[in-house]
Structures are given as structure tokens and as C-alpha cells.
Length: 166
Image (cartoon, rainbow, N blue to C red; front, side):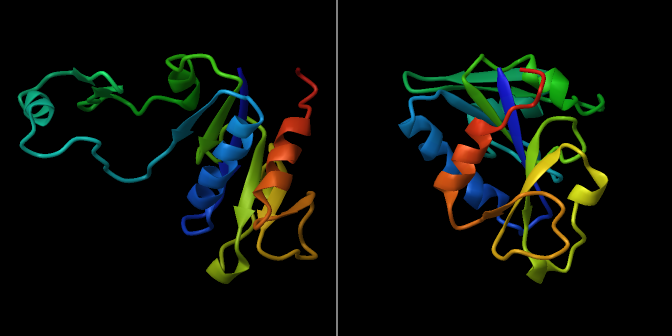
């Protein structure tokens, strides 16, 4: 399964770019899945619903299923957060798995960068950043620059990128 990521600081536009890239790949006939890392507590469930009550009662895993989708929630309950590699093994194979976050993992990724945030660039310290998608080109970019406003060009870059391991 081909894996490609988007990394950047909070507020840089990773999710906006991700949601504009997915239709680009789907329209080209690819199957796509995503993994997003969250640095904060999150819940895909609603307090008071049956599945929420199951988790609150102590269930390790709760699966909710319908005729349209299913979701599996796994409570860590003090366990270590799983690595991206552990999570990848749980994913159904697709043509392209897009990863949002996990900026320290060793997979090819595009740095999403906005200078207005005042945050440092990631790519000088990460050889797995293969390009930078930004709202403006900057002299200190040491990788190819992709205009953040052109998801078709970014999608083409991702599809054309060869890791040397493929």
C-alpha cells in the first residue's frame, strides 16, 4: 500500500489540503483511505448513546455498525498510544493511504507551511519531507515548492513521486 503524508504545524491548512486532495485521487480512479493524528482527546461517539455507555462501562472495544458504515472504537485505558506502523496494519489495503500528522514518522510527506504562523520549518530536520506546500514561495525552502492553492498539482506530485523503494 502506498503511503504519503501531510505534516505541518496546527493551523497550517493540512486538513483543508487533505480534503481537497482526496477528490483529486478518487477522480483519477484510486481508492484512498486516511489516518489523522490528534494531539488531544477526541471522541467519535456522543455522550448518552448506547455505544458511549458501553465504553463508559469499561468495554475495551465497541463496534457500531449500520447498513452504511461501521466504526470500531478502541479504548487505550492506560496503554501506550499505538505507533503509525501499528495502525497501518489495521487498515484495509487501498491504492493510496494519506496520513495527516505523524510528522516524525519515516514516510514521504509534504510539509504544509504558512509563514504567518511564525513557526519553524520542519523540512530542514526531516529528510522524509519531499516538498513544501505553501501559500508563498520562500528562499529558505530546501525542497520543491508546491502552491497550496493548487491541489491538482500537489496530487500529481504525490502520484509522480518515487521513493526508490517502490
